Length: 290
Figure (cartoon, helix red, strand yellow):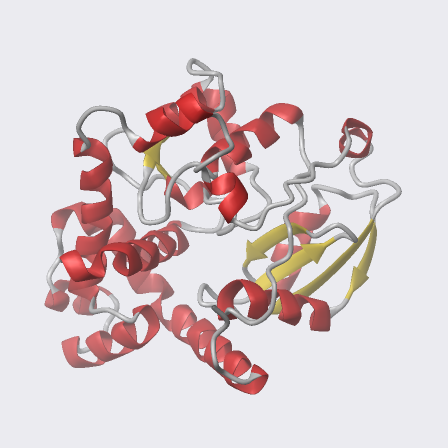
């Protein structure tokens, strides 16, 4: 159901969340390394040089929940994955294929991949529109084709553009921040229809990206489970490389892939951002159970 808020309200809310994320990034990186230890409010606040009161207020405004609930939500999501009885969610998704109840259809995905020729030519003959807009996870670059969204990444403008450009260096790149803001409002603000995703990469990478979509929101999966779901249970390194090469952050949830021992491990856009995404999802999914 669309949110009953005006476009100006949506932009103001995204701007505030983006600014707050910038202030929270150091704290989230610290929590990403220590969430399994359930750090106290005083410890988390002291690690980033804030008073407990200020830290609690800022964190809660950004996350919608307290730091304690946020960390507990990540742990709860991991426990659900690790302690599930019988068939795991990924087992069920694997049995069903990447259709039916999987994330593939309920994430508004046309999942129209680029042709093999387009992938080999690294974007030659394609026009890619890009621009920047605020999100709850900081400023983001949005890359769009005539078919939908091909890239979503985070960071400073120059670095984020370089990251996207080197994936498809032969494309015709045209800047359009208005289109990026429209996409941001749809994806993060609930305003309008979300764009379909256009998957552009080698065939096995696309296979892994589709496998990531089978991980339900608020839950996690190990890299080994993702490899098995992608049909290559022994291809751990190749699966890890494909996860790391995912060009569409958040919507293709590479942040839900974690190490076998529960560590968050590496993330292309920073461990703090990975913790932010997992925590927000888990808090939304399980907040009432904590």
